[in-house]
Each structure stands twice: as structure tokens, then as C-alpha cells.
Image (cartoon, rainbow, N blue to C red; front, side):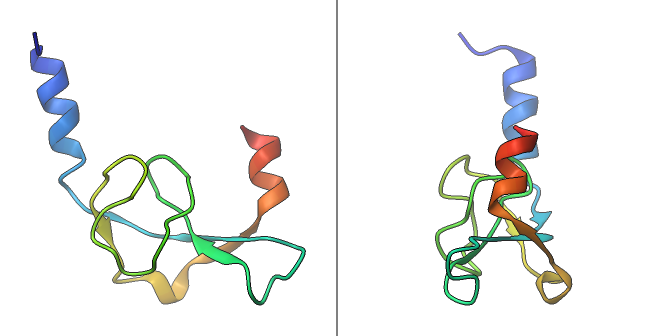
Length: 79
């Protein structure tokens, strides 16, 4: 049975969040860069897709040109 909180949480995924970070893999940084989902911080498979393929968050790409590049190793250390 779904609760009111479950429905409210599900609705937040429908509101697009701006993609503001790009993950760089140091082995070949010019080849291995992926945008990061602002909700779950997982790499997004393709740029400009409408939803995160991992958590389903709606994505907003309007300021993607201003995204910050983060190193893959620093993400592992934070989690």
C-alpha cells in the first residue's frame, strides 16, 4: 500500500533538476566523461536524455555548458 509520503516523493522526480556536474575518469579524461544525475549522483548514459537511467529523475540540461568537472576518485571517497 502506498502512503502519502511515497506519492509526494514520486512527484519530486517529475520536476526536472539541472545537470550541474560531469564525472571524469582519469585514465582517459578526454574520452571518459559522463554527466552526473543531480539526484542519485550516478553517471547518465547519454547527454540530453530526459530522465536518469538509474533513478528516473527528470533532467534539465539548460545550464549544462556551465557544469563542473569532478574526478571519479573524489566521488568514491565521498560516498
